[in-house]
Image 1 (cartoon, rainbow, N blue to C red):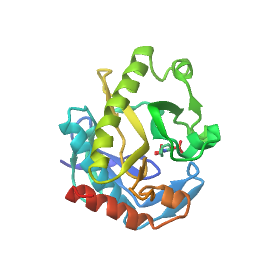
Image 2: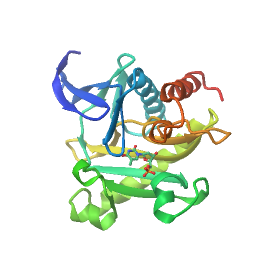
Image 3: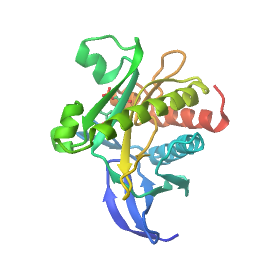
Image 4: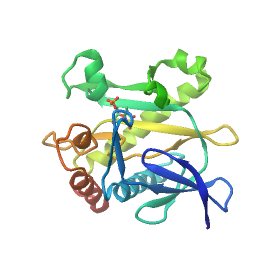
Length: 237
Ligand code: TMP
């Protein structure tokens, strides 16, 4: 397969077309951002860690029967993905109180939610990705009632699989963000990435094994992500 021209450059990834219809060549980059891009740093090695972690997770989800955009890993920093039209919505699922949920409701981080909670955010940098409800999703023509129901159910299914994958290596899945895309035939499939950039993972001692080490300046991102990748590769706690 031949790599074609650059199609899109995001905060952490570059998407290239290929000579094959509907296949994208994705390169993971070393940029880390926080505060919706207001803070930016180059962290050497971050791209290859996230590409390898995301590839392993998506391989596991594909094998478990989830339909995703992931085709295969090409190199340490590159993978092939099915080209879909990204739905402009971040779907967040929370198992444990943390982050903006703790802030919004004035809660301490750490309480386990009796039922996981699914939230939607409108993907719009200029507006700082605002929190939206189902009716806003319909008003903005992002998704129909049926699609909203599918997105919620699929996210809960993926949560069950991810909780198991992470717990097998001793990590608690606190919360995570997913993005979905539409194929030309209208079907919706899981897209984007699943990594410590997009998930909160706590170890048995409550240490942050995710991007919060960068957001909160409480640790070395490369050391933490390397630890996560090594555990995933070796399947050990
Ligand atoms: P939050 O507590 O800041 O709302 O984040 C919830 C989860 O979603 C957390 O695992 C980090 C992830 N996330 C992203 O991947 N991208 C984002 O832009 C935001 C705001 C959160």
